[in-house]
Image (cartoon, rainbow, N blue to C red; front, side):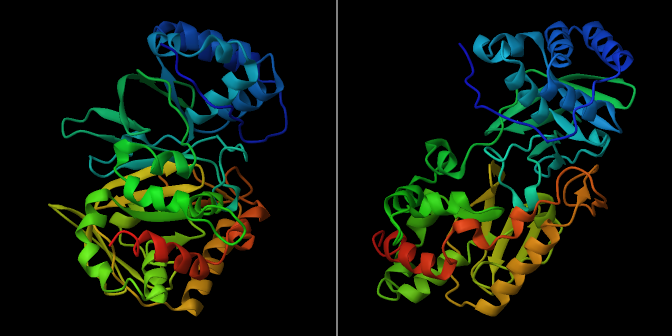
Length: 391
């Protein structure tokens, strides 16, 4: 059985031929750990410009390489393994800047690192940032990586120079676009997805496509049970499209990807409707409310998508208020921060080290909604169908 992986690309760096001594040492370390297939891949990478970029970045400073076993790599489609560019791209998502696996949080909390994957065709995060990778550990200390709804087991660890090598039993797949997640039945978001996909904006674009086009977005997405539970409340608002639009906009943070470590830390966040979020965390779970709304539980955090993150909630946040000025200010602030050049060599959510490193500096992140229509207008249109037709 073959794993089909999309075409990927990596962080653009000036091509530099990797020092042969580093490559030789890395290959020797991988081979000694039984990772002979990955060792061969690393050797082949130095024969291409893209491969040299990945290896050069890997060799500079502290980095963490999540290294798939021979068995994991054996099920990758041969058409990918024979393409040096694709192989280099896949490796990019397995490299995290920094060495901080020893800071791994215990589940349900997670640790998130910034990878080298930054292909604009696949990754459209705010400020041109690279894609992220989450991992956690069990109560007994066993570390696992969260990837596409599955837990990837860490089987061993080793290191070479400043590269920490974390051996895993599956090849990691980069996050897909938002549409793929909403339409994946395993996430139980089909009630919302069917309406978002079938509702068209004035230009003919589906609402789901519009959301997928935003550069940097956080969505608190009610699951099927949550939508069902809210039907009686929403029925009373069926004719109030302004209120329904406000409800939708208050499920979205526009212009930034807010991952669970920031939610757990109860950082200050504003919705696309200009309402402040309140987060709480206790022994029973992680919860969210917005602008004094009802409180719902976040039942699954950090569902990564190409342009941001989805957190699945077990209810609809009922807040019909909006503050356009506050929403605009929050969006402008988020895109301004995202446009600052930063290098993140620690857990995402911590204060980054400012500098001209990877993961920032692109002016594209500051373009207003990047072609996505105003969320107030979009909210009214979606609300008319999303909630009006479901009640």
